[in-house]
Length: 437
Image (cartoon, rainbow, N blue to C red; front, side, top):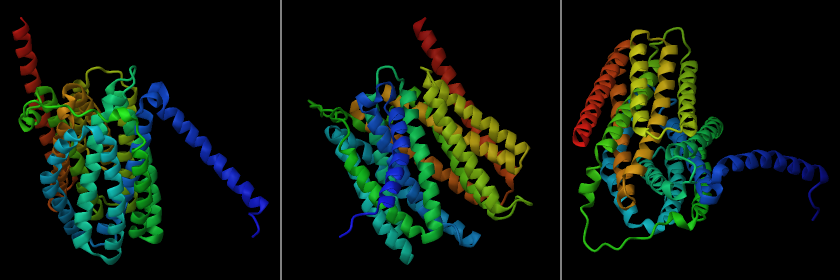
């Protein structure tokens, strides 16, 4: 058998050199400031692969559920997906955290299990998409979502164990989020191209090896991410502890929930506003591309701002992001155009990204390791439900009101939420000052 020709060997050598250069640059970035020594670098790379896989699944499901359908039928598909996602998730997800807390000594294997299981589910969903089997598709999509959240809960819980000494929690969380967003953007672009050429089912098939390989690499995380199980001399009131997280965590969670409601509202309100032709004189595909680009840029900006932040007060960061989202939405309600809608999408994504990074840092700092996964599980559940409720609100309002009225309703809701949190914080600070005095 003849070996490969010399020209082909040279071509592959050039390809390898082209791939190695950005790979080495990425490795230097992910392992900077001691991140390679503590394991943060590996966690960043693993989370980037996890996010790319999630992007493939999201684009594939969007192609299967939305595009190519009449607007009315697409609304029904989206509403069904949101409801089926929210209701079981609200029941199942709160139990993920306590399970992870009880299995702290095997966190690497739990993270690997979530990735491997998603790979197998993607193979099943590919067949369901190809045959239009909704009975299989929706439960599988729910399972993929729950497993994705379980990975995120585990990743957030182990962050303090891989944190280098000179990197604040907000910065470390932001570094993970920044690489995750970049990889998700690349994954979404690849998925859109594959979906257009071969169909959504092949996008899901492409996600299978990515998840399976990521599961193998998850086992190679440093051993110290597996915290030893603590011997309990007496049972602890776990649920009471988790539900009573303290005023600082509760206020930050409420602010993030308000931002998530706005995020879900923007996605579906603007989507159907464009598809219904309410933005006259604008090509719907161009409008959707502009809105998607604005949201993506806002998410990247939020992660970049967090990675450069040296703030030791993440609670103030959370409040500032809610205030920023409120002001932008109020402005768009008075001056509604495609460009102001894009500006709100950018600011909203920025606020959601930076606010979530600050919230994660608050939980990692304020909540003990014995219930930290449970706290993140409850938080992820509430934030997911908030996003779904915002999406349902946007979907319903797109049937009855135009852009300015819809943004006006959301502005009022955000303003009320921000005012309530400011009052709560003022009372807490005043009470603490009186006690100290």
